Length: 450
Ligand SMILES: NC(=O)c1ccc[n+]([C@@H]2O[C@H](COP(=O)([O-])OP(=O)(O)OC[C@H]3O[C@@H](n4cnc5c(N)ncnc54)[C@H](O)[C@@H]3O)[C@@H](O)[C@H]2O)c1
Image (cartoon, rainbow, N blue to C red; front, side):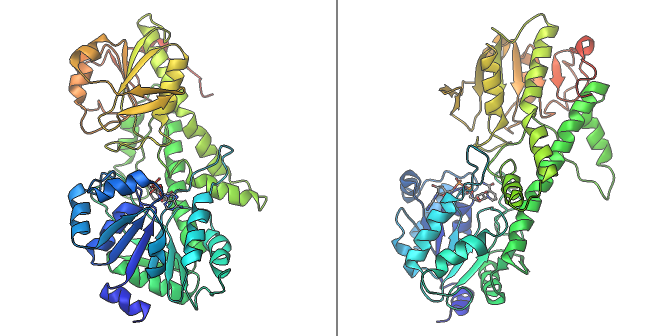
């Protein structure tokens, strides 16, 4: 049967390479639509846990995994043998940065090499990992065509960026529009047909480069706007204005404005990393991506700003960071997720420890982290623990936190997320990032950003 008809009848076999935050929810959505899906991951522990009916991704419940396995629609494998039988292969492997901040596309290369070994006529190969423009055409196409098969004629190749937002229950794989850019119009049509079987709206674009660049624009847009409000927070700090109130006021404009909020810095696998892919690509064209560089710089400085606030708050009560007992609340990079990749909390923890503080942390989603080369375990959050600290630093506003309770018990609370916005008491011990504080009234250092 022709590929297009197998896609429409959901009889196509699908292989998903990389079962992480992106690959697993995708694989489940495909299995729910009736496709037979084989998930392949080189991490044997992940494969074993899926086989045992567990899930390590919050958006995918264990019962969903078990249901798909029981229905014979999902199987997890640590080997690549199922690739040759697959009609569709999606690649959802990591795209991190190397130590020198250059793109590390080795995972894409490794996955592509496995696909090339199994490649046959009529297969549809789709890259979903975020990467620099040109990856699909300049890297994957030649690697696959080295088999003698031709893209767009013998097999089909497309890029379709994943837009998953961990922790977001409203926008799922099913209802988030998906972009598709194929190597040829036929590649685009087949990939569009595939996604239409389980995504409400699929948007074809004219090329794989357009789809690659569109994904980078989405992430740059966030990085630059977050940098803007992070700098605004510093400006408001200098001027004695509440940045949170300013943003809420501006957000009443019904057109031409979208609110972004300051915080302790950027985290996660995407926003701090992906714009660097584009900056790297442009360097090869003698083009310096200034917005990307500046936004990255401003966002990367936020942990230092938080540490300065902690120092000011302690100073206001006659204490120093050295020797202070500090509790950090939340180390995941954002609310209600367990992911600590690139989390600014790790930098804050490390900076506070380096300055001689006795730091502990609590995060209901993160049992332990590495800081300054040593493991640190999450402590149990109790009233006694809160009251025993010189300062509590809220870095991630998890839904599970009892903020009024924390504010009541803490001696000083440095709030980097405006989590205390509804609390009208305790003004004399709450220090918010980018807002005037009764505690710091006399120690505001003017002109810091001048
Ligand atoms: N996490 C997000 O919020 C998000 C959102 C949109 C796009 N993305 C992009 O999607 C891609 C994947 O991100 P993620 O968060 O799912 O990463 P992840 O680290 O959670 O998952 C990737 C998985 O791929 C596996 N893997 C690595 N090399 C492999 C190989 N050669 N063969 C098979 N499996 C392999 C890893 O073991 C891991 O389980 C990245 O390019 C990322 O930028 C991520």
